[in-house]
Image (cartoon, rainbow, N blue to C red; front, top):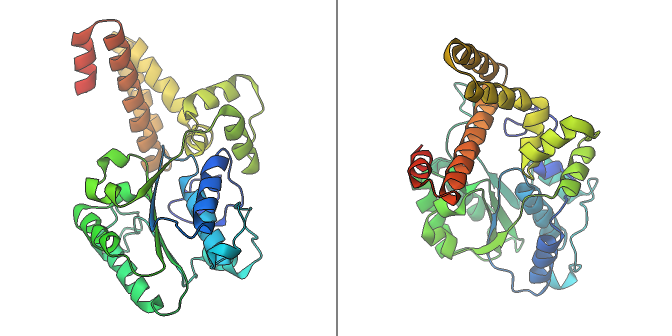
Length: 311
């Protein structure tokens, strides 16, 4: 992980500081229009696969709102943030009194990111609203992602969504909205983002200083990333391509060769940043099983399809 934040991958820019967004012009235009109309929903559920720009979009929109607190004065489009402005500097440093970013906290004892967003984190939102009430400013909470809320935290967020304070706005991010409480989904306006196309993914990587130079490597990254910048960075900076190759060797091998291939895969997975690497492997394994189940079902082999679906 990057030193700037335990949530930011090597080679990436924290969404709060990222001046660029690629591939989501329609979503930006929708948010800008709805805000300028004065009828923006108090909670927007920004949905889509991990690593495609949901958090960057949320921070850009928050910057837009806090820069133009009067909706009628806001432009009809969201521009790249002015990183030199006081609003942008405060957002990037986490010092804004009008923006709260809720994500999985770091465990003080282990130094590692906890497995869930806890109710204690959500209580910060209640304190945040009470501190800023009466200022007349917008108060924006970004939940990143809501998939990480544990049950108590989800219920606590739901209570705030049911009776939101004045001038409060929630930007709720989700990689898998079907896993959220239906009552949370019903109180949010859904905004679906699609995976990036190859051109936009290439532009995003180039903006991060990691351009695709063409050839076999570029083909492998574009195919394996599935439109996700974070997946592309894991392929390029975390040995993701080695993981896929080792996994393919396991599937292709038999007998003693299979055991050697398994040991090689284990060695790859136990390298540096093992949490990120292992998460990448689990995602790849899940995608592999889904593909196998789908292909078996389409070919009429329902026994195999069910077996892979159960796995």
